[in-house]
Image (cartoon, rainbow, N blue to C red; front, top):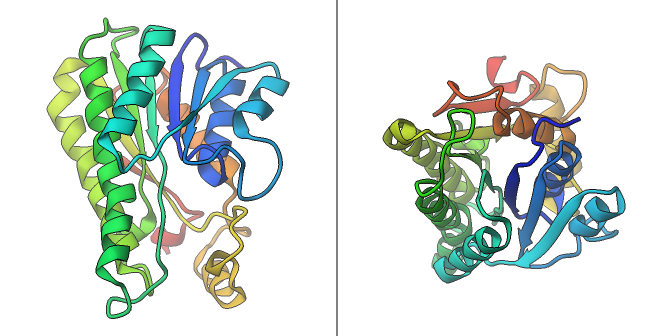
Length: 257
């Protein structure tokens, strides 16, 4: 498979979950991948993402990055371009949550979620666009940005308003960038996952919440990280160029039912 042959890609939050699956899929499609995260080892256990890719014959490296810091994001992208020559694909995936209600969410929790989930995407988009504007287009496109939003940026997230608000902001920021920079041949889309089963071991696998998700999802199973990775590979490829400003639902039909 070579959908992304000769492309360079950065994936934030790449050590675990959706980011890990996206990075591995991009590498399998021929991309050179920089896996960015605050730690290299996955919460699910096992080898670091870049090691998994390298063991499979792909080209990947790891960069310690706190996306809530502009300096860290600037260093990430500047370093990648210095080494690889350009940035074709930027995936802003890193995110956190609190699982606390409005009255139980502290100011520090609120600001930390916004710092990672919204500021982090803003920083990643801004720095990526700065770089992409300097690049010559390839097959009509100077660069592609993929932001990971959520269905809970479109409907309420029970018991976690900070997460929901941050993801709503991601979706709108995506539309704004797409509208403002289409003339410059920069493509920007978001993916809004439904319930995806990852390696998280806290409230994400609470039996009652899983039962609720299954009851709301028409597809006979819940999502897998590979479902989001496949969508990201499509959006990162030359098959998706006139498609920009979209918040693409990948939710097994949850929002349709």
